[in-house]
Amino acid sequence: MKVIDAKGLSCPEPVLLAKRGVAEGEYPFQILVDDETPRENILRFAKNNDHHASLTEEDDHYVIEFTR
Amino acid sequence: MKKLTKLAVLLTGAAIGFAAILLVITGNPANMGICIACFIRDTAGALKLHTAAPVQYIRPEIIGLILGSFAISLATKEFRARGGSSPLTRFVLGALVMIGALVFLGCPLRMVLRMAAGDLNAWIGLVGFVLGIYIGTLFLRRGFSLGRTHKLNNFEGAFMPGLQVVLFIMLAVASPLLAYSEAGPGSMRAPIWIALGLTFVLGIFAQRSRICQAGGIRDVFMIRDLHLFWGNIGILVVAFVFNIATNRFNLGLYHQPVAHSQWIWNVLGLMVVGFGSVLLGGCPMRQLVLTGTGNVDSAITVLGLLVGAAVSHNFGLASSGDVYEEGTSIVVGGGATPGGRIAVIVALALMILIGFFYSKKPKAKVSQ
Image 1 (cartoon, rainbow over the protein chains, first blue to last red):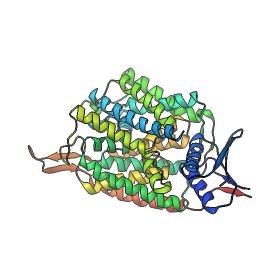
Image 2 (tube, chains in turn red, green):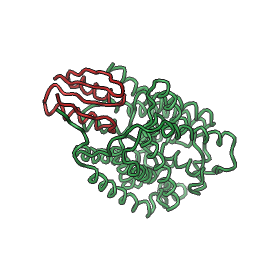
Image 3 (cartoon, rainbow over the protein chains, first blue to last red):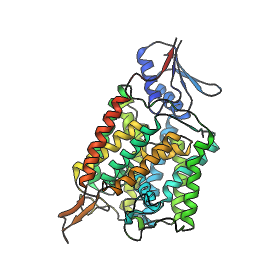
Image 4 (cartoon, each protein chain N blue to C red):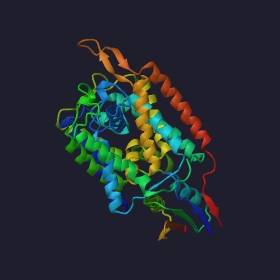
């Protein structure tokens, strides 16, 4: 599975990477972030654009998996 | 959840608009209830980093925003000391943003407050702000990135908030080490506990809602998302209503408080601010809030804003308000200085250079 590491990147890079992941169309893919703001931004992006995204919290980061 | 978070941004904007008018009523300069750029500049003056006598005063509003954000991020365990993402470039961008803001005579927040008060120069300047943001998004599309942050020692993250406490104590005891304007905008100030208290609460709201004025416009361009834009609406509408209610609305280009009518420099000054804010990942207010959450890159950006303010006043880059022929609206002086005009052009060129230097494939490690 494709894993996009967006940890530590400034706004709005994480959501732009998510957008790129969606545009590339390789599902499922995961995007990793380590801050609440990009986590919220990506989940909101998914919801606003009717994509299915699930959130898992790991020790020091979040994993958001897009499944189309 | 979607409605709640949009409401949070809107309410934060509304609270900012309300607090800004309240701060004017209680003593801050007209159309300048809260101005991140002007107030960091005033603080620079108080610390004698510059010696422009009319603008020297430690503004509790800057302190309150940082400390409110700090407190809530600690409480919600969102405080995280991190940094290392091109810090010096961020410092430089902060300085350039301040230079642009002082040519316009306001940060994006003051721009909206001036718009809400009928200052048409701010509406004209908005065009520059939007254009600057648009140019920034072009670089984002090309893969602009200042790089990743990484975890830092908590001391790094807590230092700036800690420093705010020291600055407030110095202000509260009227330390003779500081400078205090006796005339001009720096002499117009709301009582320190009101200024601190209101902005402490705003800092909490701003951290929780993630409000960002540049982000609000940027996201319309980039992801067609109006979520953050509601923040700007909240500030504008509430400030407008209270200006009307308190007879502070004055529609026009002239005789506006601490403002000039040189449209090109209002546009270009705010273009620098918009462009720089996008490259930095947030407007000046957002930088203060992020500083409170332990983001050291934002803390360094704030220091860049501070030094940019000092440089602006030490080298005559900051604009001044229009000067009129007695009893008329004929402008005979004031506005952007020769140094300020050159600085804005240099700032735009430097930002374009930074844009190109840092535009490459995003550092996203992609594994299969």
